[in-house]
Image (cartoon, rainbow, N blue to C red; front, side):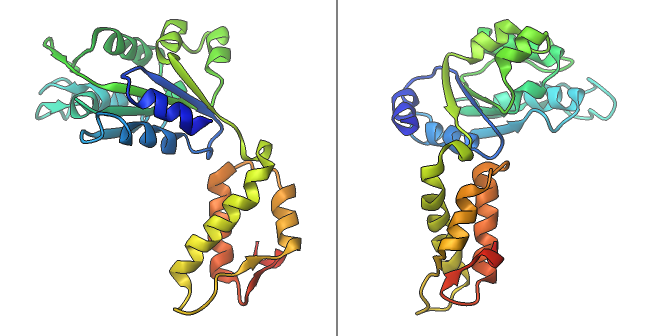
Length: 236
């Protein structure tokens, strides 16, 4: 169902909001939307909004002019300018401060950016895909996220469910990952190991707080440590 929705929204320029816990594949979905869109030959620029201090993130996103702050020896375009014609992926958008939320709202609304320390407005044609592992609607009620920005981002919403609620997918994913990782470490002619029932039971009962990313790490470890034709519980 998610990929049917991806196919539908890829052709548009509408803003997309991806919500779900960490490790559920939000960036994978964002890249799929871009890769299937008319913008596929233009840049896809990911930005982790929660990983940088406020002032640095502002400069990274919107650029700065020479002399805008200490150390700004040359003018530098921001990531919105770099993504012109393509897609910008704002990961963990809930980590943005109120100041940056206001600036982002203006860019989405007016389709232009003004560099830090500058006065010139630069038009940008950028599709925005945002992602959050927090409940943005709840943050709006708490007063930590702007409701007007939330409604601007939430034009098309795609929810990524946690792995623990997708029990039927766990062994399908585990076997696919085991095959992929085993092919990297096995010599030619060796068969890909299978998953023993005891190990499969553990995989099915575990809560997977790290979601698909955690499952991927577990299966890579199993592919390296397995010493026969069967992944057993001790390899997990």
